[in-house]
Structures are given as structure tokens and as C-alpha cells.
Length: 127
Image (tube, rainbow, N blue to C red):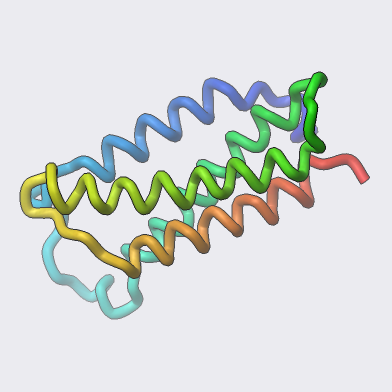
């Protein structure tokens, strides 16, 4: 059933929502709370980037004509997710008011990208 879904609109929407969330000024984000104790922000990053990679793998996995195996394309999508997460940290540092660079956000984005890759590989590639 997962292979019959048109992932493209979901992937585009997810990317746009993620970009908007990452570009919000720090003044609109919640301040210190009990969620900091459980690293809620990092779990959100993992989920957002996992979803991003999974959805774009779904888009690419449906294409019939590839010069490279689907698994290799999925790995490239995950790498792009990692690069995007890193780039957005620099955008936050230099261009978004009241936001800063956080190495642990990059780590969470990378973990999420890898998780999205693993889930996509297991659910979307025919064995």
C-alpha cells in the first residue's frame, strides 16, 4: 500500500513546513520549560528530518528509470537531508533573529535522516 501513495505533494509540503519552522525567529519559540529536560527539541528534529527523508525516498522510489539502484538514491537523499540540516543551522546563526547555531541540532537532524533512510529502505524497496 505504501508504494501506491503519491509522495510528491507530501514531500513538498513537509519541506516547506520544515523550512518555515527552522526560519522562525527565536522570539516566537517557547522559552525554558520542562520539555528541555527530555530534550524535546532534539526529538522534534529527529522526527522532522526522518519524515523529510522518508517522503523524498517515497518520491524517488516510484520512478521507473534510474541509472543507479534505488538504495543508492535513498542514501543520497539522506545525505542531502544531513547537509540541509547543517546548512539551516548556519542560516539560523547568521540570518534569523534570536536563533543560534547548535551542533546537537545537526546531530539530531543526521540521526533523523538516517532513521528516515532505514524506514524507507525497509518499507519502500521490494525484496
